[in-house]
Image (cartoon, rainbow, N blue to C red; front, side):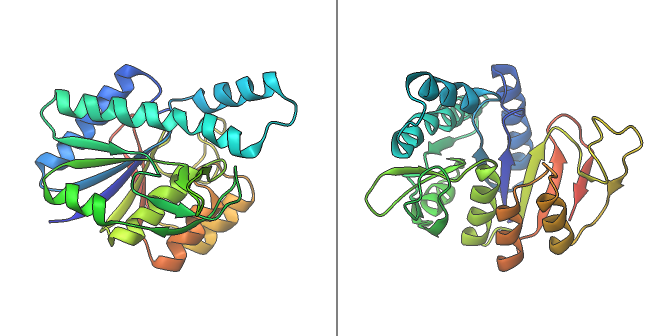
Length: 239
């Protein structure tokens, strides 16, 4: 039985209806016999909204407190997705980064993952549950919540796939794969069927928004196989 990590970005969980659609897609995988771990971003626009609240109060808010504030976005999304799965008959449980725990260094707002304790996740998988983990966040040695920086949910997903020795890490976004240019802007952009880690890192360093560069580095280091898929169609790209 294969173990799959599925990461859904903010647009994929941007509304209650979209969260329900994600739940249906996860159920399809479960019905095929897959063990599934889901990593979710906050709902689209929520992190920016939370950041703006902090900056309305202070021009230089304490980074520790910023992490306290913005980490709540993912907590909402994972709880809603767990409820959506349970509603359609799929046993599920959600964990924040500190509940796993996903251990990081102490650099607030751009922390790096140092270790993932996988026992709690594996325990719930063995009970037949879908485990939903908050992306973008972890906990430092002092017990404080940290966040991983923009695109950090990708890094969470790849790191979990490596820690759990998953068969594949699927990144769901609003485009069906990796393209030569943004297909929402460039009409004749071509989908790239297969791409190396090195090529993907170069694209990320040049501004491609498909994946965060740190997540690609993680994948290359641990040999994590990644599929980039669309949340809104059944076309997909593989690399």
